[in-house]
Image 1: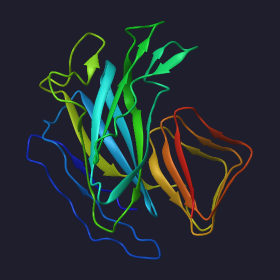
Image 2: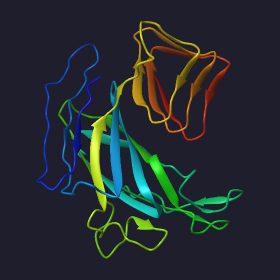
Image 3: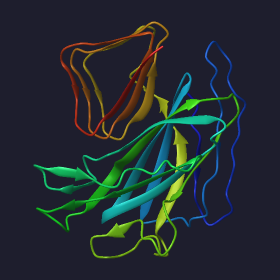
Image 4: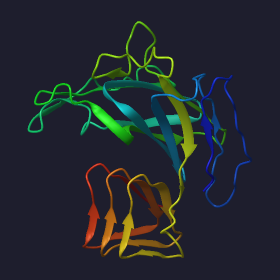
Length: 261
């Protein structure tokens, strides 16, 4: 799997193209544009792109050193090349209510072709100013089907422009307007280092938090026994046959996709 990325800085948008790879399955290359955001941001938003055959998914994460109560992102894509399949916000973190009863925030907006607007907020009535902070906090996962062999354009930006406030801290600071506010970037996933051989037989393996990768085999992937996928992992298993054995543990907050092909 190729790994490509564009990181925003104090410069004009950058583009990156590489030739496509052709085999029984056609893998597309992708063209990414990054908005003009200065380096040294307080909040880094990353869209990790994972491909598997005819599908494409973007897992959107935020790494923030400050407590935030809200986020707002817009994913723009080429509607002639991609067909939107689903949008799943991480409502385990972004909700109204308390640990016993939660209510999801406003439904993601997909009414305009070629863009998805995802807004999330946290109001825990038991700890209303607690906020969210940390590395690789999952905001949402957006999934597409590919329509063409063209290189589709993908970009991340603020959900809505001023006077709307997207990223707001628990102290009332609006990081949209801060001099070192929010950066946006997009990267490919990588091949999981634990996944070797064909078939792939995973036993006594732990996928550690922060890992984003793809595990692929042309025959079989067997997961378990004694396999743990930690919270914060984003992994895609792709094979004609996938077996999950007893003793496999997937922690809440892990993103696991299984595609039989």
